[in-house]
Image (cartoon, rainbow, N blue to C red):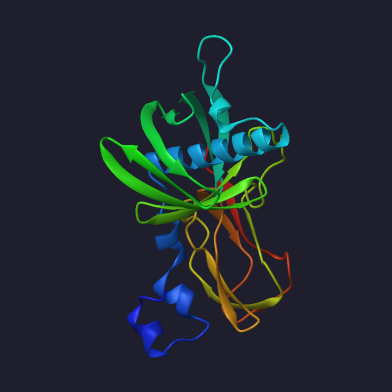
Length: 235
């Protein structure tokens, strides 16, 4: 945002995000497998350091095994997508993470609460991290993403919108409807735009499918949680 010429010139409004960072563009900014592996390293070290501190253990015990080495299973969530990972730690600093069948080796050479240095394929990198509960924000290799450790999270019900109902996120005015019955839409595609509190919200669903009904039109006032669009999710 700060590097955008329009923003820097002061010529912007509440429609700036929707215009220069549309939902379709943002939804395509998925993390690379190496970025996911780095997130697993960050979450692993955070848990390990906390455990070591609670039990007054030296950091040398991180990654120690009483028997043969076996990978730790991690479930990491990015937005609505979950990644099932295996993390093998050798000598407390060499991490081998399996991401969607690909093994990624990361050697952590230096670490602190806010960042760590690592080597991958002979190239050194720096990952800056910020922890919040079970989540970690990871800034590395030109990208920043937030991940949540859901390894021990209880089974949850269907995510909001996964039943195909697009709901208004607030009282407001519909300023645009981009679909009609019969349209085939993709996950994350903007279906409607709602104006509320002088801001525009690009509304999308976490599923793709076929539009069955459109209950609103541009210019219409709606209440919070009103059903705007109904989509039959693709099988």
